[in-house]
Length: 65
Image 1 (tube, one colour):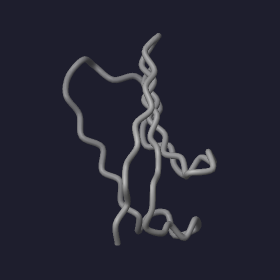
Image 2 (image 1 turned 135 degrees about the horizontal axis):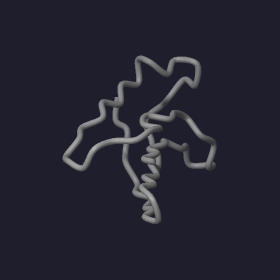
Image 3 (image 1 turned 60 degrees about the vertical axis):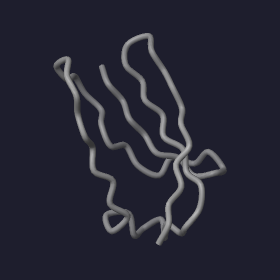
């Protein structure tokens, strides 16, 4: 099971981009702020968390408008 989620600086979940089984390989997942107007995303620091089986990692990303 692969799960990819985006969080704001306070730890609130903003979006779930992937939630399911994927075959081994390389993937790109688009993240468009236009889809998340409910959250009024502003420029700033966000985090994404990738979970795949027993693997889990959190990385920082910066959103610039």
